[in-house]
Image 1 (cartoon, rainbow, N blue to C red):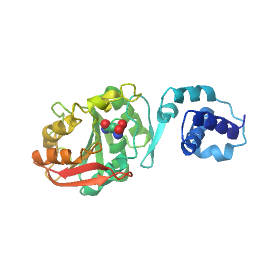
Image 2 (cartoon, helix red, strand yellow; image 1 turned 45 degrees about the vertical axis):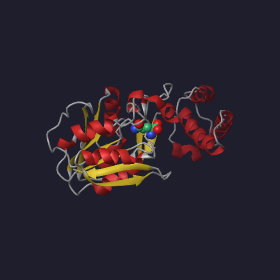
Image 3 (tube, helix red, strand yellow; image 1 turned 30 degrees about the vertical axis):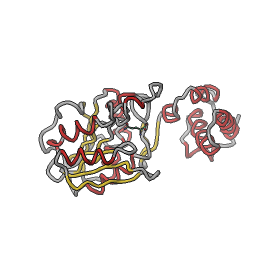
Image 4 (cartoon, rainbow, N blue to C red; image 1 turned 180 degrees about the horizontal axis):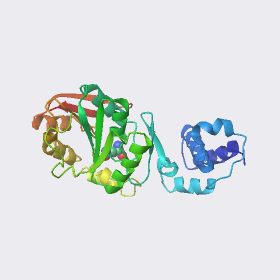
Length: 276
Ligand code: GLN
């Protein structure tokens, strides 16, 4: 089977799983390249070639059918121009988070020194910030040792191991940093309400569970982590749909000022930022 036929076969199977024709085409190309072990941008030069496959199309389709996300199967996902390693150790980076990163970069002063990405997961936000801004160093923090190991691999993959480091930290605990250590902080915490969690999700539940009202992390971070920020430093949160007003109020109550928000591509307010 040449690559074109392999992609066609995969597309048909994905259509049967209920994917839209656009998604089925895109995923089929990704999976065909993954099966043949070639980078995506080589597909069009390889369409008429028959390549040895390291995994069968049947197995790939079965994994998709069982609910395994594409990003976990192919083991990488693009975020803000970076290709990051993705697997079950952390949440898959979402395009929604780009609006949070952009608002953070807009509010970050020049030469802020170190910035903190708390609840970093794959490391996508802190790594993308460091890639974008040569004047910063980033610290990626997470409670999950698995997520931290993945974030560390991603720092190296992106060639940023010299400016980005990883540190274990619990958002509900005492921050393991000095007062005023950071010139900015970005945070995409777990924010789903416990009752709305899908317990069968392949993504780590601890990266999604924001407590009874979904706001536990915002309260803990705004009150417990304020001291690690320099005066005037921005704190930028990703929020769930409809949580922006509550999060703005939490920030104001903790003494932050100048609340601004940003919308994601679907027009949902996804970023809430304020300064210490
Ligand atoms: N956006 C994710 C979802 O809806 C949630 C991410 C998070 O809790 N930080 O699945």
